[in-house]
Length: 374
Image 1 (cartoon, rainbow, N blue to C red):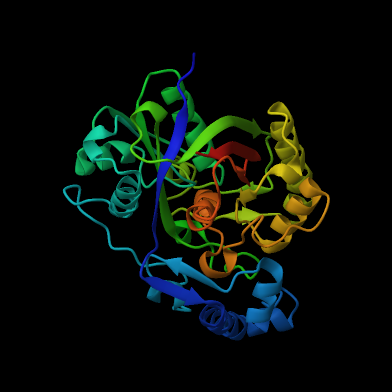
Image 2: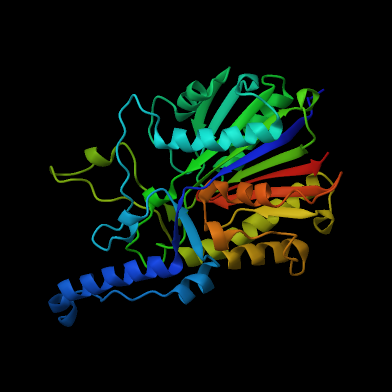
């Protein structure tokens, strides 16, 4: 018989720097002025298209985002740089993702009333891993004083739910007793802040989740009733950054800057029905009615997408508490979005209430967990 698995703690680390839409737009529009002025002759000849200005109202209407947290602010807002300025660290220093992760993990362990020594696995899962090796999870395990083993994985914005499914099965099978899943997302490192259609989407953050065998839990939490994963290949969300970039160049010039890019209209059209079908199928697996679920913690992609997905699932407009939106404060935080929503919006649920955590993103990838308050 499989072990009962419970979520007993969550943690959230947000960097101290925050950028408002107004600040971001002022920087972007200054960049547009510079570009159009420097390329005035080519634009007048029709050889180049002038760049368009942005506005805070455009961003809010398109996404529901008002602010975003970032690791480094000044470099992003510098119209001549348009990317964060993150100082390189020596091999003997904690990496920046490790530093973020340790802060979120400490909070999650305190919530779960566990010590680092009681953790026998740590999984680092996020859209972008800082390096290939040694593993980020191994570094975090070392600095946290954890036992067992750790490994890294990435499934874009669904990285967290896929890692939670791995952790669930490891504990249910008896392989592990307590697993920490941690998601240090530095999304500002893969954003092209010169792109009007995407420069406002993402924010930096780190979440951590403690999962354990219910028999050893020191506090009540949420039992995981089931997990469901799906992938379907698509080029509509892509980032070609990788270790072969420098080898792909035909000369000795530096490689181009590889950043997040997407065909937003196709993503909107194609992902919504996939997520709707996935959620309804997962609920059907457990013989649950969509309207019997007390809370939906969805990936925070953009407000229009989230509202339409939950409307299709429920067959009606959702009440704000049924599918909380945290985009206005945190923006899209890649794999962390659904967990930020869960972390901030689960304390009012009562015993036996059922909720669903769901992520969706590049791949396409969709992951969900159905949980019940204990």
